[in-house]
Length: 415
Ligand code: COA
Image 1 (tube, rainbow, N blue to C red):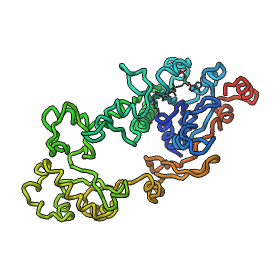
Image 2: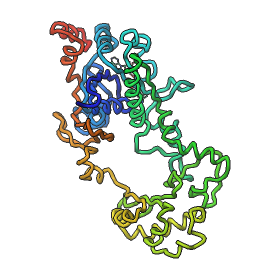
Image 3: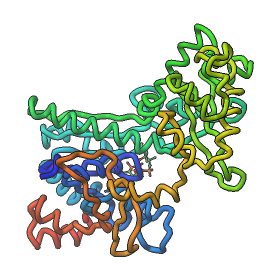
Image 4: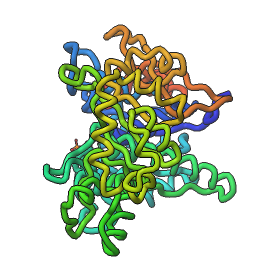
């Protein structure tokens, strides 16, 4: 039995943030019923298509293990079916623009009347406040949550990151909120509202930058490269390039082949505990006892010199050789892996982190599997549904319609 077997989710999500949440719940065994507009469906089905008229990878990679019903929730018959689905489900998840469900006639108050045990979970761009009415996409959240102002190099513009921390990150938060509310319902017998804002989610992940904002009021941030370079700090947490965000200085360094391979780099951390091993590996044993380099505080103003010496060594090795040499010595390093390398890495296939899926219209493709592994509830990844593939099945099994009622709903265009 899967961990969330028996939990039924009414999935009104679209694009990325909401679908990542419900996909995760589906991997844990929940029955996820994705509601989509007849003839249109989730907008991502048609976005960034690589094969004409076939659901895009964008859509398929966010909607595994779900069932799809088409339903016009603005039509009277559609509203009747939607009401039945609210009665039969445990959780409703949505990430529409603010107010969309209220405009359909399904406010939180109305949903509670229909099903007091319902957990109603939403992703919104912002929490309550001046921007709560705004539509938000990934990069807006990264910018509004503090990610962009603290990413990039100090002399360059703000940068967004390729990791979808605003969308997929908030989807994770929402999933945790939902399972917590399900746990609470066991005791209270009642559902509740769950809200995960994308700005909150990004700021939560930028915690160390808010830490540095406050440290800045008491003096310069000595572990930032700009300290050693003599560049003055301003009023807010600066962009730190590839500096490590923790107390152990680290940087991205060139490796053998960097001139032609854009990913021939390694991340190298000068952890204090292994400093002596680092000195030996890079051929600078005299630094072990040198009063300018022996301790972390002595090294801080000289990080440029330290990393230049380490890079002179890493440039003579491939990023994998750096790992092979440093790991046995407990020196924390990590190769910069490209998407090509990750997609071909056998160990990630073996653990189900990267999965090959077969789709009736597009054939085989790769996707990321469940990043959270439960020993008694392993996640098998099933292909995403075609638009409305399960409409009749859901009308029959969940809504309780007979053949005539299904035909009538189809005739009026409600499904
Ligand atoms: N039947 C009938 N109407 C439906 C429907 C259905 N099954 N499903 C959706 N709709 C309607 C909605 O009710 C809404 O209509 P309304 O504007 O008349 O109220 C309309 O479709 C479009 O919804 P909306 O959410 O406004 O989509 P959008 O494409 O304009 O905006 C976002 C997309 C992502 C910007 C917006 O949904 C948003 O800000 N969401 C919250 C934050 C978020 O999750 N962002 C990350 C996305 S990865």
